[in-house]
Image 1 (tube, helix red, strand yellow):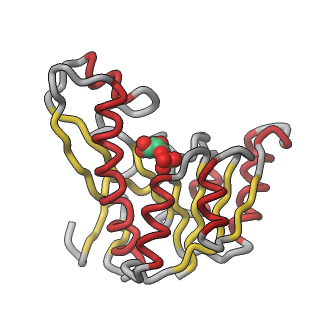
Image 2 (cartoon, helix red, strand yellow; image 1 turned 180 degrees about the horizontal axis):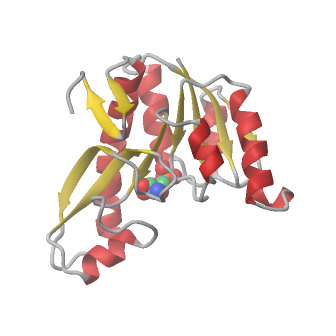
Length: 202
Ligand code: GRF
Protein backbone atom coordinates (compact mmCIF):
# COMPACT_ATOMS: atom_id res chain seq x y z
CA UNK A 1 0.00 0.00 0.00
CA UNK A 2 1.44 3.32 -1.10
CA UNK A 3 0.58 6.20 1.22
CA UNK A 4 1.15 9.87 0.39
CA UNK A 5 1.09 12.33 3.30
CA UNK A 6 0.44 16.05 2.87
CA UNK A 7 1.70 18.46 5.52
CA UNK A 8 2.27 22.16 6.17
CA UNK A 9 4.09 22.17 9.48
CA UNK A 10 5.77 20.32 12.30
CA UNK A 11 4.58 16.89 11.24
CA UNK A 12 4.07 15.15 14.58
CA UNK A 13 1.10 13.31 13.11
CA UNK A 14 3.26 12.37 10.14
CA UNK A 15 5.86 11.05 12.59
CA UNK A 16 3.31 8.85 14.31
CA UNK A 17 2.38 7.31 10.95
CA UNK A 18 6.04 6.88 9.96
CA UNK A 19 6.64 5.09 13.27
CA UNK A 20 3.63 2.82 12.77
CA UNK A 21 4.78 1.85 9.27
CA UNK A 22 8.32 1.18 10.49
CA UNK A 23 6.95 -1.07 13.24
CA UNK A 24 4.81 -2.73 10.55
CA UNK A 25 1.69 -1.92 12.49
CA UNK A 26 0.47 -0.33 9.28
CA UNK A 27 0.71 -2.59 6.24
CA UNK A 28 1.86 0.12 3.93
CA UNK A 29 4.70 2.41 3.06
CA UNK A 30 4.79 6.18 2.93
CA UNK A 31 6.08 6.79 -0.57
CA UNK A 32 6.10 10.60 -0.44
CA UNK A 33 5.58 13.51 1.91
CA UNK A 34 4.41 16.67 0.18
CA UNK A 35 4.32 20.12 1.77
CA UNK A 36 2.98 23.41 0.49
CA UNK A 37 5.59 25.12 2.67
CA UNK A 38 9.32 24.77 2.08
CA UNK A 39 10.18 25.31 5.76
CA UNK A 40 7.83 22.67 7.20
CA UNK A 41 9.76 20.62 9.75
CA UNK A 42 7.84 17.53 8.66
CA UNK A 43 9.97 17.50 5.49
CA UNK A 44 13.03 16.90 7.67
CA UNK A 45 11.20 14.08 9.45
CA UNK A 46 10.51 12.49 6.05
CA UNK A 47 14.14 12.82 4.96
CA UNK A 48 15.33 11.31 8.24
CA UNK A 49 13.08 8.32 7.58
CA UNK A 50 14.36 7.97 4.01
CA UNK A 51 11.08 9.09 2.49
CA UNK A 52 10.96 11.30 -0.56
CA UNK A 53 9.99 14.84 0.41
CA UNK A 54 8.52 17.29 -2.05
CA UNK A 55 7.49 20.93 -1.90
CA UNK A 56 4.61 22.13 -4.06
CA UNK A 57 4.27 25.79 -3.10
CA UNK A 58 0.95 27.49 -3.61
CA UNK A 59 2.91 30.66 -4.29
CA UNK A 60 4.02 29.25 -7.64
CA UNK A 61 0.48 28.93 -9.00
CA UNK A 62 -2.00 31.54 -10.16
CA UNK A 63 -5.10 30.09 -8.51
CA UNK A 64 -6.46 27.18 -6.50
CA UNK A 65 -7.41 25.18 -9.55
CA UNK A 66 -3.88 25.38 -11.01
CA UNK A 67 -2.35 24.53 -7.66
CA UNK A 68 -4.63 21.59 -7.06
CA UNK A 69 -3.89 20.23 -10.55
CA UNK A 70 -0.16 20.40 -9.90
CA UNK A 71 -0.58 18.77 -6.52
CA UNK A 72 -2.68 15.97 -7.96
CA UNK A 73 -0.09 15.29 -10.64
CA UNK A 74 2.65 15.08 -8.04
CA UNK A 75 0.61 12.80 -5.75
CA UNK A 76 -0.45 10.47 -8.56
CA UNK A 77 3.16 9.72 -9.53
CA UNK A 78 3.18 7.56 -6.39
CA UNK A 79 -0.08 5.72 -7.17
CA UNK A 80 -1.27 6.04 -3.60
CA UNK A 81 -3.86 3.81 -2.04
CA UNK A 82 -4.34 6.48 0.64
CA UNK A 83 -3.81 10.23 0.77
CA UNK A 84 -3.35 11.45 4.33
CA UNK A 85 -3.77 15.11 5.28
CA UNK A 86 -1.71 15.66 8.41
CA UNK A 87 -1.80 19.33 9.33
CA UNK A 88 -2.13 20.34 5.67
CA UNK A 89 -3.43 23.87 5.94
CA UNK A 90 -4.98 24.37 2.53
CA UNK A 91 -8.57 24.21 1.41
CA UNK A 92 -8.90 21.74 -1.46
CA UNK A 93 -11.15 22.11 -4.50
CA UNK A 94 -14.10 19.80 -5.07
CA UNK A 95 -12.33 18.39 -8.10
CA UNK A 96 -9.28 17.44 -6.04
CA UNK A 97 -11.40 15.94 -3.28
CA UNK A 98 -13.48 13.97 -5.78
CA UNK A 99 -10.35 12.47 -7.31
CA UNK A 100 -9.42 10.87 -3.95
CA UNK A 101 -12.90 10.10 -2.73
CA UNK A 102 -12.98 7.29 -0.18
CA UNK A 103 -9.21 7.20 0.18
CA UNK A 104 -8.32 10.63 1.55
CA UNK A 105 -8.25 11.29 5.29
CA UNK A 106 -7.92 14.32 7.54
CA UNK A 107 -7.40 14.83 11.25
CA UNK A 108 -9.09 17.76 12.90
CA UNK A 109 -8.51 18.97 16.46
CA UNK A 110 -12.11 19.03 17.68
CA UNK A 111 -14.99 16.70 18.35
CA UNK A 112 -16.61 17.17 14.95
CA UNK A 113 -19.17 18.37 13.99
CA UNK A 114 -18.19 20.93 16.63
CA UNK A 115 -15.65 23.61 15.72
CA UNK A 116 -14.87 23.13 12.07
CA UNK A 117 -12.11 25.43 10.83
CA UNK A 118 -9.47 27.20 12.88
CA UNK A 119 -8.80 28.00 16.57
CA UNK A 120 -10.67 24.97 17.83
CA UNK A 121 -9.02 24.90 21.27
CA UNK A 122 -9.73 28.55 21.94
CA UNK A 123 -13.34 28.07 20.90
CA UNK A 124 -13.77 25.05 23.18
CA UNK A 125 -12.36 27.05 26.10
CA UNK A 126 -14.56 30.05 25.36
CA UNK A 127 -17.62 27.82 25.26
CA UNK A 128 -16.56 26.34 28.64
CA UNK A 129 -16.80 22.85 27.22
CA UNK A 130 -15.89 20.15 29.70
CA UNK A 131 -14.65 17.84 26.98
CA UNK A 132 -12.81 18.34 23.73
CA UNK A 133 -10.83 16.12 21.39
CA UNK A 134 -9.83 15.16 17.89
CA UNK A 135 -11.52 13.49 14.92
CA UNK A 136 -10.28 11.52 11.93
CA UNK A 137 -12.63 11.73 8.97
CA UNK A 138 -12.92 10.95 5.28
CA UNK A 139 -12.42 14.09 3.24
CA UNK A 140 -15.41 15.39 1.31
CA UNK A 141 -15.79 18.79 -0.38
CA UNK A 142 -17.23 20.34 2.79
CA UNK A 143 -14.33 21.63 4.94
CA UNK A 144 -13.93 19.39 8.01
CA UNK A 145 -17.38 18.03 7.19
CA UNK A 146 -16.68 14.51 5.95
CA UNK A 147 -17.90 11.35 7.69
CA UNK A 148 -16.14 10.84 11.02
CA UNK A 149 -14.26 7.56 11.44
CA UNK A 150 -12.73 7.82 14.90
CA UNK A 151 -12.66 10.37 17.72
CA UNK A 152 -10.69 10.69 20.93
CA UNK A 153 -11.97 12.75 23.84
CA UNK A 154 -9.98 14.61 26.46
CA UNK A 155 -11.17 16.48 29.56
CA UNK A 156 -10.99 20.26 29.67
CA UNK A 157 -9.76 21.59 33.02
CA UNK A 158 -10.88 24.93 34.41
CA UNK A 159 -7.43 26.47 34.44
CA UNK A 160 -6.38 25.12 31.03
CA UNK A 161 -4.50 27.40 28.68
CA UNK A 162 -5.03 27.06 24.95
CA UNK A 163 -1.54 25.54 24.63
CA UNK A 164 -2.13 22.97 27.37
CA UNK A 165 -5.41 21.89 25.86
CA UNK A 166 -3.91 21.72 22.37
CA UNK A 167 -1.12 19.49 23.61
CA UNK A 168 -3.55 17.15 25.39
CA UNK A 169 -5.55 16.81 22.18
CA UNK A 170 -2.46 16.33 20.02
CA UNK A 171 -1.29 13.41 22.16
CA UNK A 172 -4.56 11.68 21.30
CA UNK A 173 -4.18 12.52 17.61
CA UNK A 174 -0.94 10.56 17.58
CA UNK A 175 -2.89 7.45 18.66
CA UNK A 176 -5.99 7.65 16.51
CA UNK A 177 -4.54 8.65 13.14
CA UNK A 178 -2.19 5.67 12.70
CA UNK A 179 -4.98 3.34 13.81
CA UNK A 180 -7.35 4.57 11.09
CA UNK A 181 -4.65 4.25 8.42
CA UNK A 182 -3.93 0.74 9.68
CA UNK A 183 -7.60 -0.24 9.31
CA UNK A 184 -7.75 1.21 5.82
CA UNK A 185 -4.61 -0.61 4.70
CA UNK A 186 -6.14 -3.85 6.00
CA UNK A 187 -9.26 -3.27 3.85
CA UNK A 188 -11.37 -3.00 6.99
CA UNK A 189 -12.54 0.54 6.37
CA UNK A 190 -14.62 1.87 3.48
CA UNK A 191 -16.72 4.89 2.66
CA UNK A 192 -19.98 3.62 1.18
CA UNK A 193 -22.82 5.94 0.16
CA UNK A 194 -21.46 8.61 2.49
CA UNK A 195 -21.29 6.21 5.45
CA UNK A 196 -18.26 4.83 7.23
CA UNK A 197 -18.09 1.03 7.26
CA UNK A 198 -15.63 -0.69 9.59
CA UNK A 199 -15.57 -4.46 9.29
CA UNK A 200 -18.77 -4.17 7.23
CA UNK A 201 -20.61 -2.46 10.10
CA UNK A 202 -21.86 1.14 10.19
C1 GRF B 1 -2.84 18.94 14.32
O1 GRF B 1 -3.34 19.45 15.52
C2 GRF B 1 -3.97 18.69 13.38
O2 GRF B 1 -5.13 18.26 14.00
C3 GRF B 1 -4.16 20.04 12.80
O3 GRF B 1 -2.88 20.54 12.61
C4 GRF B 1 -2.02 19.98 13.58
C5 GRF B 1 -0.87 19.38 12.88
O4 GRF B 1 0.19 19.09 13.74
N1 GRF B 1 -5.01 20.02 11.64
P1 GRF B 1 1.45 18.31 13.17
O5 GRF B 1 2.01 19.08 11.99
O6 GRF B 1 1.01 16.93 12.78
O7 GRF B 1 2.45 18.29 14.30
